[in-house]
Image 1 (cartoon, rainbow, N blue to C red):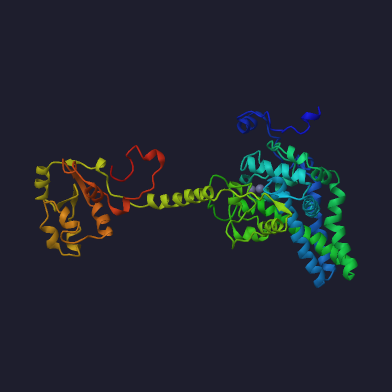
Image 2: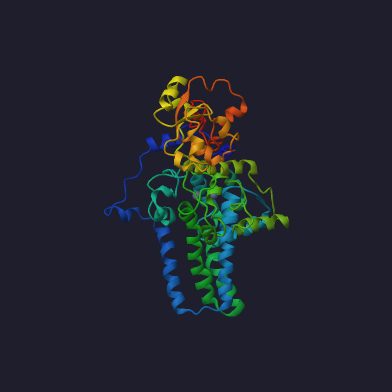
Length: 450
Ligand SMILES: [Zn+2]
Ligand SMILES: [Zn+2]
């Protein structure tokens, strides 16, 4: 039926698709030395091994002219952008709209990177985003660096990759046309055109083929592969740490700006990878320039407010770890409640002082008190709150924090009627702003007073 031709492929998947699929479909048996020959994906193996060999032989037998060197670098950028600005951000993620001439340009440029058609590439990439780090992710980073870099292409996949809809791409005449004529377009863009330019331009067809064609292709291949391996391996996770993607300048440098991968996996439809102006993201600059000249429009940007929430959550997580590694004073829930009489009696045997309703044992501190031992001694068995909070000396926050560590009890009835100032005095400065999980807030198990 014609109406069904472009229906989304994931329209009727079960709600628990991932668990359901992983449970009910069996992966192919593991690759062993016995069956390995039947499991090799020969097209990928040829594409990934012949260019490096030909390139090495060519480099040893062909001298590099400076014009050819420039062409090689330009061709690297051109075909690299075809993948990053075209295949990736335009088609796989629809992060902006492009006018037809720009689409045609990117479809040709991307084909020159010899990474399959837009259709095939985007299909896999959408699964990668939807099923990141699971067995339904075609380049699952959990299976190691080598697998996510190149291993996933060399052997037949053990599992069918997770379903992802590409009906929008099936409707695009340019995508369909590129898919249908992929092989001649790829051969022309990857090898013939650079050889032609260098041959007709400055008589170096062989150099054009070897350097701007073959060697450049090997570089572009591994540049893209680094997005699946390196970008899931090294760097920081400033936006989320649920999955493997990471941000690193080095990855950005070798991938034409796709290295801020932690941001990208959190906000995949954003046309940017790097959000700061000084971070290296030439693909973003390319799209931005195209908008300025009217070739691109509807550049998608995730709301800054939501981006910053992600950053804040990660910062709080780090601070929480620091907080958990410190020792905190006992809370009133954990201390014995002592009557005034018992306090008096006990204070005869050891130096106990009452401050803000807490009884403190200062025996180890008396000799070290900067104001002198005598000022503490005269308050043993008495309430020193007024003197401590400015009556004699306005103690520092650090002094208050240290004092709280010497708590041994709570005075019975000594804390019932308190105003706001009194209330604040009961909480050491270091505990007035603590990080608590939502489920700790009402349980009273946090280390602060309540
Ligand atoms: Zn990724
Ligand atoms: Zn992506």
